[in-house]
Length: 402
Image (cartoon, rainbow, N blue to C red; front, side, top):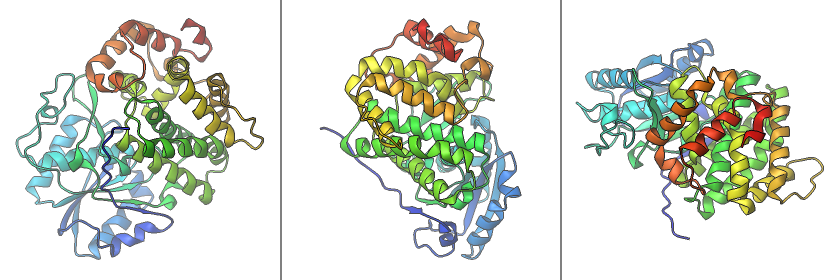
């Protein structure tokens, strides 16, 4: 019962909340903004960028667009965007899109306020210099269009060092969003497959925050609710992607899981997933987590049996006919069934392009680039342990290799 709690982000949540961008007093001060999206063009096609630009314009805020961010943001991209933001006198940054756009917006806001700094000056692992920023980040507004990362409710962002195999998360008090607007209507355009993968990302954020040694009472409460909501509603939403009520439930689950991340953080499962993303940037982050998760949770069932039993109970309570599960052994079949119901039951690392001869490098990468999350894991895992998890995750039917 010793913890720190800091949650400074105002969150406007609900249907049509984006319209409040026109008059909310919580908008950061300034008349020049940068809107950050990824390079896929979906924010333009859906008209979301035009709406945000128009709403800002109604408040006499001129905006410029940064739409050159990769699905896995790279350091060169955020550094170049930050230089443009400084040159144009941008006073706040708006992240519009999925987790990659929001992550990049946080990184751009940080670097724009610290002229001469490079992204890896601040990274505390890998080849990073571990420096402390001289100035706080510019204010950042988060407008998520997917339900998964929870980046609207936490200070964290993940960036890959250009030209390398380092993908690292970073954040500080100054990189919490100054304002977040979560409008589930913006998520109606997300296809079922991406809905499933991003929804599972939120599941892992909640479950890992419940297992980490940094857990605390507030994150525990939110984590169990989030796990229950996703277990009960995500498989239905995948089949009913236009169900606005379910979109709202999953939007809250994502935001709730983001709060869990802010309060408690994740575990080494994310260390491994970021290593996969570093070697295979085309692999969606949520997909890497899914591929690794079954082997990971087998290890966690031994390390934290009581808490894994709690997670099983939370999942079981979401069922139409709950069986009163509370044994850690109950978690795995419930979890596997949920993955199958979401169309993700067969996903393994091999499906993401991972090769057997990369397993050792992946384990070393996780230990080098994201050791803090491994340190927060409730069981000590060395290189050989991580290699065993990776090997078992190549194909879903090889769990016995643990």
